[in-house]
Image (cartoon, rainbow, N blue to C red):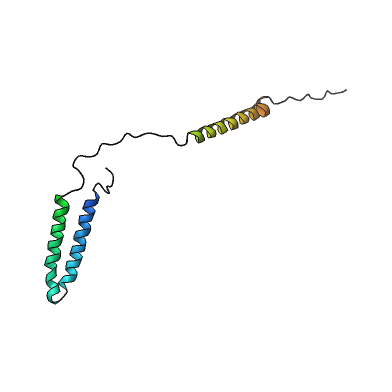
Length: 115
C-alpha cells in the first residue's frame, strides 16, 4: 500500500485541500460587494462537480496489486567478517598476554644464604 499517509491515499488529501480552499474563497467572496458576492454559488458548484468527478472516476483499481517477493540482502557481509577477524585476532593476542604474564609467571630463584 504505497503512497499512503495515516492509512489514507492522496485523493483524500486532494479533496480536503479542495474543500478548504473553496471554503476560504467563499468566506472572502461573502465580504465582497456587488456581483462578485454571487460568484460564491459558482465556486461551490464547481467544487461539487470536481468532487463528483474525483469520486466517480478513480484512477486505481479496487483490487490491490500483488506484492513482489522481498529479497533479504546482507549488504554488510564482508565488513562483518573483517570485524570478526579483527576481534578474533585481538582476543587471541589478549589470551597470549594473559598466558605469559599471569599463568606462566616466572619463579625466580632466591639467593642462597651463606653462613
